[in-house]
Image 1 (cartoon, rainbow, N blue to C red):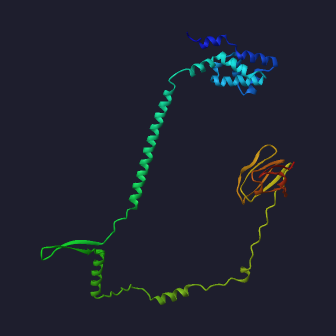
Image 2 (spheres, rainbow, N blue to C red):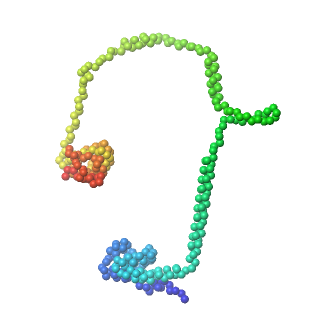
Image 3 (cartoon, helix red, strand yellow):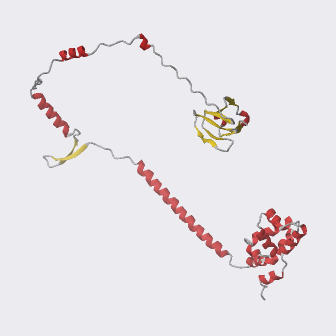
Length: 323
């Protein structure tokens, strides 16, 4: 006696999507509104109502969608989930899976693989510990003592062999050669060679006297020349502003990103101003000023200082000048 096929049982069961669709239409809800509240696509909502659950990402997710849809429409969630299981045959498939035998084979295989990896891990750890111990032991061994003594075997008159230690001659051969050259130089008499006199060369005293006679006497500067004072240059006059224009002077005590735009939308200045710099801009008012670090900037508009405390939000400030 054979059990009924799941597909045959699914064909006779009621589609829970029809119940959901009828309840949605009764409440006057559109598919788009339901999709937005369930965080699903309109296509997924249409597939649920049509009973096309095979196009959804798995029966587990589809069962959750049906439960959430029923909760949204205030229907019995458990009843619709049971209808979903009967319609899709998921309940029968689950019972058939639990009745199968020989389920322990994958567990045995996994346990064998786990034991193999544990054994391999133990071997790797043991090999690393052995290598570390050998490295530490080789470092702890004392280095052989360095000696400058050589051994030489000497045969005595009675026929026995004696071993004597001889010290190495550490002095280089160049030292002996230099000493021999120095001794030869000390024994040889020193010979003085007179410097040849160049013809026509005058004594040094006469040359100095001639040079002193040719140099003109030093002239002391007069009082009028020493007291001349260069005139202080007068500052250049500030150009007058045209009608509808404003002059903006920015002085920076810290690095500050700055952007200035005139009334026509033209960007007069946009850059990261460095500390210690200043800039004067003239443009059509109102001027839009945006400061990235307002505490590091001093603003002067048309010769008057501008208070930025009321315009500062955090560390930035944005204001319009000349409105």
